[in-house]
Image 1 (cartoon, one colour):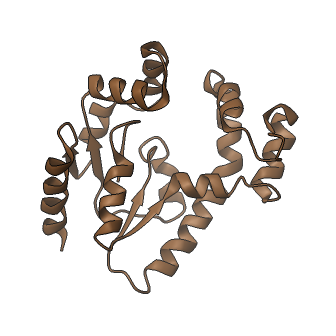
Image 2: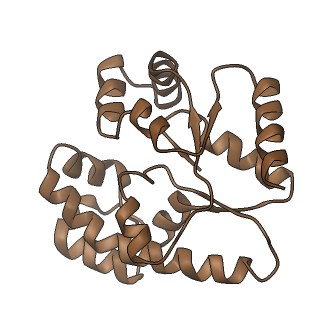
Length: 195
């Protein structure tokens, strides 16, 4: 399961969890692997310095984000540090969950941006669900959610592969342009097609 920023992936994940499905949240894993004293944490702080460390020793994600947002080399360096930890942890969780679940969903915001890495680690997908909404809806939701300007929202959206490009590479498109009731019905339909 993937999508663009502010398209509603978390909402869909929560709906699937409520229905009893196993959902692996790659954002959650990415936060866990950079906790203090984890190997990725030590490498990140060595690479990016003390300016990204909060008083409680955690990594200040906003400060780190500012460092890498407009610097491709810094972003690539950060990704080269954390991705192996994220993917190895994902593989471990898939192994654990597959013992008692026939279907496992992975919530991966940047799936297409990092698709090659998943294949290198032997993670294959039977289906790719794209949680989709229009660009204008994305902008509005992002501005409301993050309390940012339209310009900042556009920059965040532009940092990802265009949502319409993602549509062409997905097995199912879940349009999340309506209300929650509509979204639930669309999830039900998509689930009925794979059960």
